[in-house]
Image (cartoon, rainbow, N blue to C red; front, side, top):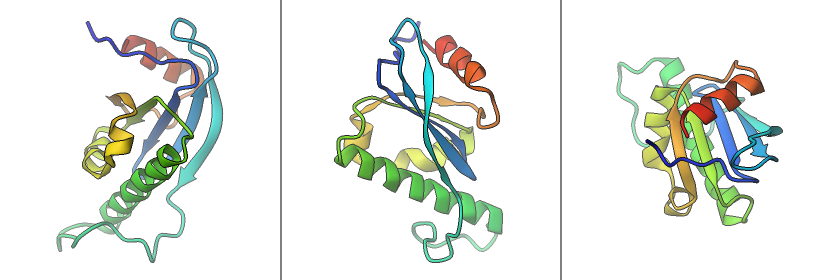
Length: 136
């Protein structure tokens, strides 16, 4: 049985390669209550491409998603470095989670409570909470 916990004030990121929503757990481990804490959209990324060279067969959408993964990892590092969170939970679609994991700085990895490979970006807050509880 997993020992995953969503502690009070945990920073929860729910997203795909096209955007992410941020939440805070204003409840506690036994009563998860997520409150919106902002978002990060793909937006205009013309000057902020993915790390390294893109394979020639990579589509524009795949390139955009790789770029967004890099931006998300950078945002999470900036926030961790500034002390904005102690516990991080990533809920990303499987492809994005696979893109983001190797990009996470050690400071972010040290704060990662757990991750969940699920597509919940269009889900209600209640559905997100239900999935988090199922992972505990």
